[in-house]
Image: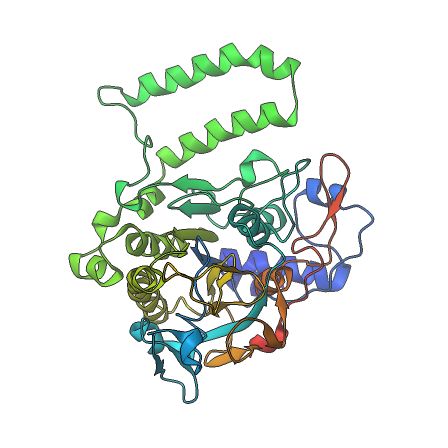
Length: 430
């Protein structure tokens, strides 16, 4: 047995031991804090994950499903946008997405999503956390749940990174600060403030850190609390990152010009390229946001512009991950807070429609070339196989092998689960 374990690579050995423990002993190799917080909860059945990492592409503002992934034959509902065929017979999407149409054999489109939240902030919060927004508590997003439950794979890099902006419900919520995402505004700027100031030697920097620790020691001993320790941990992690060779993962200048142009010379395209680089360095959850989908006016012009950006970046990302042998273990998620009405208003726009919208998944064990669910003939309501937002998030959690039934208690003692009471769509896997 020892000889077998020695032959298994480090990360695979860790997974083997973890899942063996779950299967044979009924426990998981998680931090002690997690087991004590969820003490008394039923143990989740062991299952190997189909995905190890997630690239989560968020379309902020409410992406029109009718003009992207759920085109209709009804001309009044469809407007001037025509459907096109994909590389999967029988599946059509919008003419705005020609590159994505060539990757449909690797993607699963869910056309039957439905949300209870019709306002932007509340919708984004619900989509990211699986819980409705409340004034008394802030819930964690899926990335922070993943860090809490299973931990980081690269000890030198943050486990969760958000590129572009932070979305409501996508942070660490009531979890400790060490599970919070690192937010990067400009993907082309590298990781800001991550190097020592010019003229400061290694010894001078070390002496400054030691002096700071000495000044803080009495305070930390007196107030040995979770928030105080989190403050110290943040500085320790920052120093470790500053000295790590993995810091190069944030440097897009290391990519050749052709690759950068293929993703798109815009913040979202470069954000998707940075996401690919980060998952290559074992960052487990990277979110990239593309705003501008709130199309109450000039819907077709604005969706066309945004869809061109999305089409180039997502089409390139899926193909790039497959070419590098990374798609099998990386789940690509395309999500938004709600869809748009089939009625075109007087401003040539579409209004909010939480009753029915589309999202998509690729990689990470997802069987490509399929459409799940259906809306009615004009795309107003779900007609078949309705998917609630917590179900969608449970599907991501299921792919990651997360214990969906496990209960974790907030600092106030309230019980929560990763995707609330969501049920994963297991039919998508194959």
